[in-house]
Each structure stands twice: as structure tokens, then as C-alpha cells.
Length: 357
Ligand SMILES: Cc1cc2nc3c(=O)[nH]c(=O)nc-3n(C[C@H](O)[C@H](O)[C@H](O)COP(=O)(O)OP(=O)(O)OC[C@H]3O[C@@H](n4cnc5c(N)ncnc54)[C@H](O)[C@@H]3O)c2cc1C
Image (cartoon, rainbow, N blue to C red; front, side, top):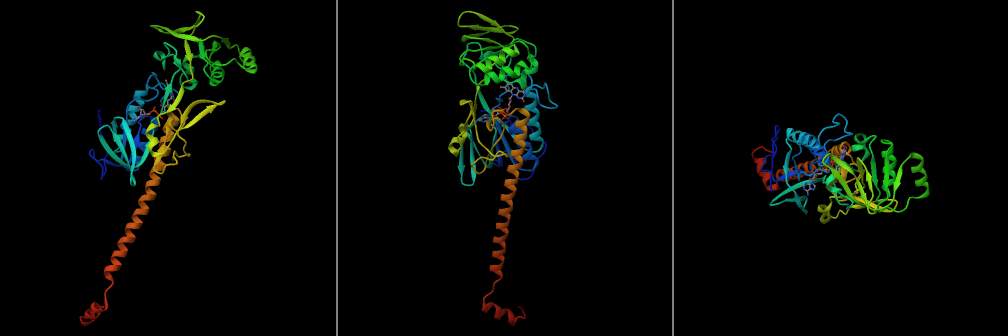
């Protein structure tokens, strides 16, 4: 396993590269994890981010709908985020967390052959997109096999867009992409027959509907060319829209008692996410979640916002605990001083002889 420790310009007492005990370990260094780590490091918390380097949008060439960063390659954003964490004394390492457990008041985090402990955990491991199994489809994912109108919609405006219908999301996607292009075709594929109301809407909007299973996504060197159907016909397309099942990367949380919840649309499961409050606090004390792990709809900018919110909440929680501990320490010290200063009558008499009290 490779531990790439990124350079740190800032540092503070109690933290160094060999430190194995942290205020917070952040698992996942995408937008959510890195934003949370920056907030914590700027609050002078010792923070370690462990990231396996596979952000969800890695197949895409550019990030869109991120104010002031529109069109930036994903890798550039994450590299800049790692730099920002390091600037404030946080550490970022490349590695995969393989197990989590509770160890008294702390959490034990296992990364290959190394164990670290943390007072709090920020989980930002994202989700995985499980694509429909059609030959040729996965190879085009993030290039011209797409899912999100806000990520790639503008880029395919006015082009021939196919919607691969596999569930209830297809009708919704058809309407959103129709806003971007007049050339939208719904490929019925494995989805049930359209409801009469949908058929009427599609007809009114000029959305074509093609029955039959898609057997292959076809592409040339210059990109996607279309899809082949079971009856041997071919539908020419420039982009294909799919609805992946979005499964939370939450397996690490199961031993801590956190089970992801199913997300349903019209009764059909479209993914899973870990339930949390507005700050990302889960029902397990000390564990926060942010980004796509906590919500399948999160985008890059909203994942970063959720990471910041969780980071601030964790810092507040630690500050409250630090204050409680300081009070207890002072009470114990006061009690010790009072006990020492209590003198027995013999000693008092002796002191009186020497004019003391
Ligand atoms: C093809 C595609 C294009 C997209 N384009 C856009 C776009 O243009 N604009 C936009 O706003 N959104 C876009 N998105 C959505 C965007 O990718 C997500 O909203 C965003 O990545 C969520 O951020 P996150 O931090 O929650 O998760 P991620 O970015 O997925 O980061 C999670 C990190 O956790 C790490 N990790 C997971 N498990 C472990 C482990 N056990 N140990 C250590 N590390 C672990 C992963 O390696 C990863 O680096 C796109 C998505 C896809 C699929």
C-alpha cells in the first residue's frame, strides 16, 4: 500500500507525520471529505484524510455546475483540495481503509498494515454507480454514456440523445433532456409499457419511443454512434442517458451499527444512502457522514458544502467534550489541593506553637 503524505506548510503542537492518534480521521478524500478536513484543520484539529483515489466523477473530463470552477478537470479540484488541507496542517494519505471498530472512547481505523485512532470519524466514501449490463456501455461511462443533466446536459444540447429506460427515472430524464435537445428518443429496453399520460406527454413534446431491448452500445474512435436492438435494428445517437443504481460505499460502517437505507422512487429501489441529520451526524455517536454517502443527489459543490457543515459540527462536538474534560480536570485538581490543605488537629497545634495558623 502506498502512503503518499502530501507536503504540509502549517503545523501545530501535538501533531506530526508519525502521530497515530487524531482528533478526526476523514475516510474518503473527494469534495465532501476534503472540505470537511479543511474546516477541521483550520480549527487546529489534528486531521488525517485517507483516500483510495477513486472519486465518482473520475471518468468525466470536466466538472460542471461548480460555481467558479466550471469546466475544471476533476483531478485538478481534488489536487487543490489536498493542498488546502495540507496548508492548514492536515494530512492526506493515499490508501484504503479496510476496517473500523470502536476502541473505548476512540475509533480504530485500519489501513492495510497500519492502525490509527480517532476521537471522531467523518465518513465521505461516496457511492458506486452500478450500470445497466449492456455490452459496450461501461466503456463509454462518463464520456457519452451519461446520467445527469446538470453534469453533462449542456454539453449534449441539440444532439441525438437516447434514454435507456430501466426504471421509473427514465420519464423524468426524458423531460429534463428534452429541455436541452429536441432530438430525444426513449429506448423502452427493460422498462414496462409507458402509462397513457406519459405517452401523451412524450408525443406532445416530440419525444420518440422505441420498443425492444438494447443489445449493444456502439461506438467508433470518435465516440458513441448509437445502439443496436434485439430485432437487429440500429438507433443512431450521440449520447445515451442511463440510470445507474447508486449504492452507498457504506460497508465499513456495518460493524459500528450503521446500515444504509434504501432510496425508492415509485416503489423501485434506485440506491442506498446513510441516514443523517442536517449536520451529517448519524445515530452512532462520533460518526458523521457527508456527500454522496449521505445523499444520492449530492453534486460536487453540495458535497463540499456538506463536508464543511459536518466538519464544523464535529469541531463543535469536540470543543464541548474538551470543555467538559477541562472542567473535570480542574475539579479533580481543586479537590486534590483542598485535601492536601486540610490539616489534622495535631499539626494545627504544632503550627500554633510556631505562630502559624
Ligand atoms: C460520470 C460522472 C460525472 C459527474 N459530473 C459531475 C459534474 O460535472 N458536476 C457535479 O457537481 N457532479 C458531478 N458528478 C457527481 C459527483 O461525482 C459527486 O457528486 C461527487 O463526487 C460526490 O463527492 P463525494 O466526496 O461524496 O464522493 P467521491 O467524490 O466519490 O469521493 C469519495 C472518495 O472516497 C474514497 N473511498 C471510498 N472508499 C474508501 C475506503 N474504504 N478507504 C479510503 N477511501 C475510500 C474514494 O476513492 C473517493 O476518492 C458526476 C458523477 C459522475 C458519475
